Image (cartoon, one colour):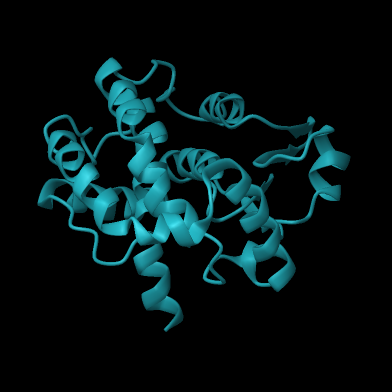
Length: 213
């Protein structure tokens, strides 16, 4: 099986986590962010992740998670995420995006190793979220806004030794935040992130920087 992904993409991280937590081997193929032709050829849409296996090609992250979950062992991801996890994600999406998005087009990720790919991402996301320079200038405000949310999250975190849909939807967002330098995290949140990264095989951005330094 082959999984076509972007490294930065939270939806791609969902599927990578499923493979890792279930201990199922999978080949990763990283695409440049401006590679529109390949995903359109595979599934008719410009989106990743895409699973390539004997059945052909499959898009949509949670559909892939459900398929992979059924390949071996006990099903782990049948139940939906807890309501409090869903609510937390919705409530704090704005400061999370404001902090992570303008920093994402970083060559630490394979999809941004070319100037054209970085420009493509920047152009598309600035149209959606606003100028990156303006978002970066609001870093301290976004950090202050998110601080009570992170404190709240520490009280409802999933068990990092388990594996449920809570992890599949939550960890990818926290992993995106790991690109933000000097972001204070409650100890419980930091421990959760580090342990889930280890168990899923999806390193935090801070860990990527250490291994490529």
